[in-house]
Image 1 (tube, rainbow, N blue to C red):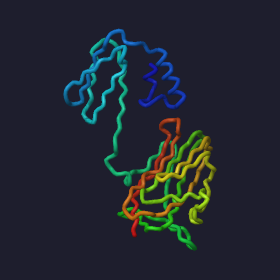
Image 2 (image 1 turned 135 degrees about the vertical axis):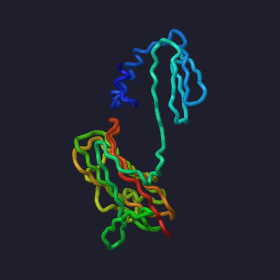
Image 3 (image 1 turned 90 degrees about the vertical axis):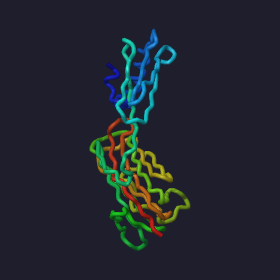
Image 4 (image 1 turned 120 degrees about the vertical axis):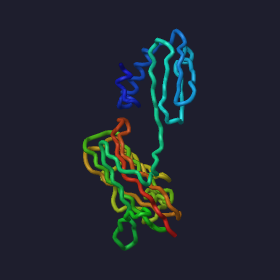
Length: 247
């Protein structure tokens, strides 16, 4: 009954997961007699045995054929199925999603003495040149008060992040505006900028940071992500994009 209350990858929150696992551990009993189990995913049967010394068996397959599990005893068994996959389309073509949040990402070209220029998308993606300073902005809509929220904004590989918090950062590293609400924690990594909030009240929040187009080439800009860290299913992503850095 407790297992059936779960949703495939847990019971909804970190605390609920811990409580459920502790309860299952308390109630678990070693098998008295060996249990024969076989797996078949389109080929030959693969036999395994569950006993007191091996209470769990693991079967890994790269086959997309239906999986058949045969229990060779009258004892009840529970099977946990985990599926990992890579989307057929590249990340540059990823479509936005919204499940409890909304996040929109935009890119702007920054030139001294000029107003920021929005970088549009064409058939080849976003077109920039080596040396260009780019301001990335993200807008997050949070429809209710929440806790422990993470916002991750990945960077295309040809970009170099400009961290305004470094003492030697150039003047152009400072974005046009500060976050709507100061994050509990922020990280400027080589591949992403990450914001974390212990508490995020209901509202709309804007973020901005700057990059430099460093290496010529064509790159994938993965979708930005906002999610509740400890509550499964509350998340949203922006659209992916292709970035062309010309010489």
